[in-house]
Amino acid sequence: MKRQSLTIREQKQALKRLFVSTTFRVILLGAMIFVLVLDVMQTSVVSTKGYDISLYERKIEQLEHEHRRLQVQIAEYRSMKSIQERLASLELVSADMPEYVILVGSTVASR
Image (cartoon, rainbow, N blue to C red; front, side, top):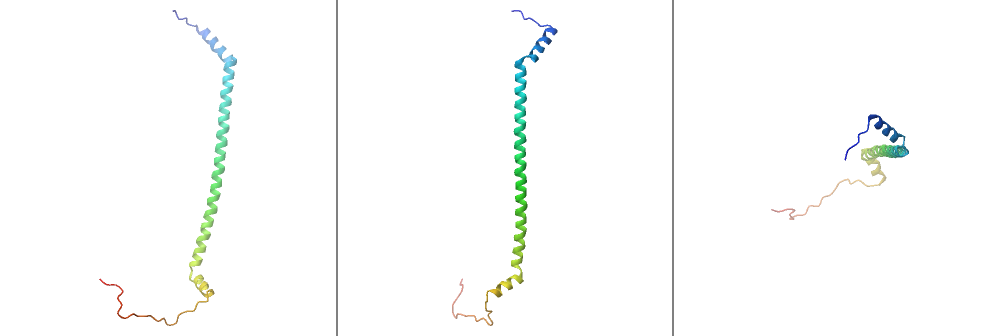
């Protein structure tokens, strides 16, 4: 079997027919639509992630503010002035002279 070789002119015409053909145009249009849909999907995903990130950043700021407020509140409750004020409101009686009981002959610990 002998292989026919096309001339350069015939090759150019065959290539030109391919680019002008309806099948090629439909395939090219389909590829363009596919790439466009992928681009829209990627843009949608990226914008959604950006919204989520900004939402989490706002939540972090709120939690940090709450943390600072609680730290200040803890410091206030630990202050001596606050402790004395709370003790006064409990109406406790102070012990003047404590009396200790000493048990005679009892051993606390032995070897």
